[in-house]
Length: 223
Image (cartoon, rainbow, N blue to C red):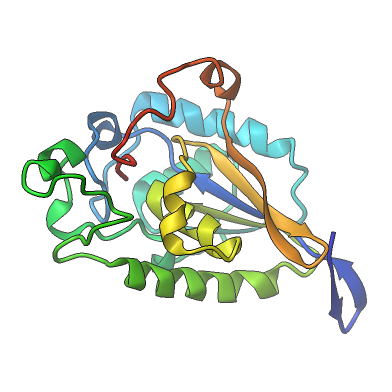
């Protein structure tokens, strides 16, 4: 636990919840989905409702809810029972540029071994661009944690970059944090250290733990 000193005395620092949007048709097909406004599937909507049930177990304190402007994120927040205080472009998914709407397998036909963590996206954002955006988001979020929690509703790749930034690792280390549709990660503090407290929490987590196919995708996955 860490406390923040304010004009009203010491208060316990809050936590950050990173909630990924629910399933979309493009995600199912493995297509990289950046700025394209793809809606949730019916299953994705159900996932969002179930995510809301999970979030109630966190007993969030006066949460500030900030969402990506994409419809799939805003709809997820709504179905999860979250009242959005602000939509913010800085929480948008990675801009995949020329790779928008295509799969990793298709990219590998011209760029073998490509991943978003190791190679550029022509016409889109670089790792350096993402690092700047991560620092911007954290600079806004950290002051909000004085006695309250923050929920950021967004996307897979950028949320993984935020985890890396929060833990003060290289942004490329986001490759180690798979994040399923409608799953959340919980960020917080131990003493003065920023930590990843829980990761990839979703209603099917128990069955996923016994599914040997989980974590076998070498591409890092889109969206």
